[in-house]
Amino acid sequence: MDGSVRIWLYDRDDRIHASSVTYKALLVNPPFYPESAFERGFSITLDARGKIIRSVAQIAPGDEIRTKLKDGEIRSSTAPRE
Image (cartoon, rainbow, N blue to C red; front, side):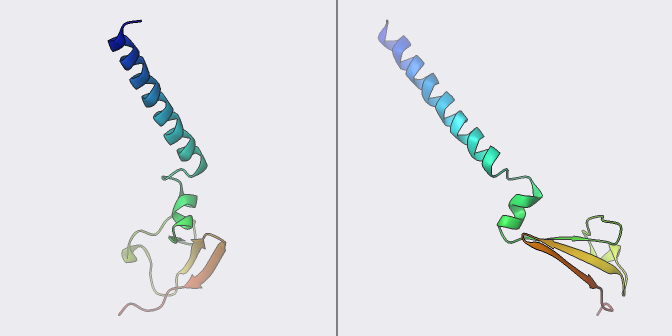
């Protein structure tokens, strides 16, 4: 086999192996799933209907909210705005 072809094949093999390792790592800990955010210490806060709260404008004083964490959920109600 020609030397340049052999180098090309080795390069392709290395790229395939690297892609395979990355793919397997993503299967174990997908970065775009909420569970991976929980693992990094984040939480998700939901309104009473289960919709994600992205702004204080979505809630009013006295609203019931749920905060989802890695190991469970906290239920609470909102206080008056300052």
